[in-house]
Length: 226
Image (cartoon, rainbow, N blue to C red):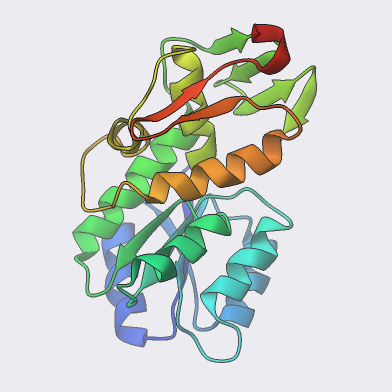
């Protein structure tokens, strides 16, 4: 069964060309022309991934992303004409998994969609990773602390998997970006910091992800690893 992509944008030309390229790559595509329709479609269609424009009238992409994240961990790729780093970080901090800056190539969009969906599929040699009281199950896309499930986005999950794969090893931001996206591209390393902040909030009260200033991040299993 083809993966279902929800494409939300108020520009008909972008909707048309992106829909055509995604369909040509064997995706099932549902479209919406504004934020309110996009949110309704997300709830109704249960897509496998959402491509969401930032700048839309009335209900913008940030509001839609915030609403979706209260209900679902479906992967979200933001489309944005904003070029400031702080603007891009807002979407990531709200739970978006990736962003693409306009203007963009539709082929790039298709490639990004495939990369994010591969992360969700959890293809990996190690199906379950356990470090202290934390377990990560790629098959079921699940992280548990003391048996309690923690809901993560696909990007957060992949960062956790990378850090947990070698507890105590320091990973640079660039190494984490490469692990998350599979290939190097124009995303800046500071995007990782936003995902780390979200992870730490969800993993509270344990201190599992440690900052090594000037170098990167490492994982340990909280008090049990002390």
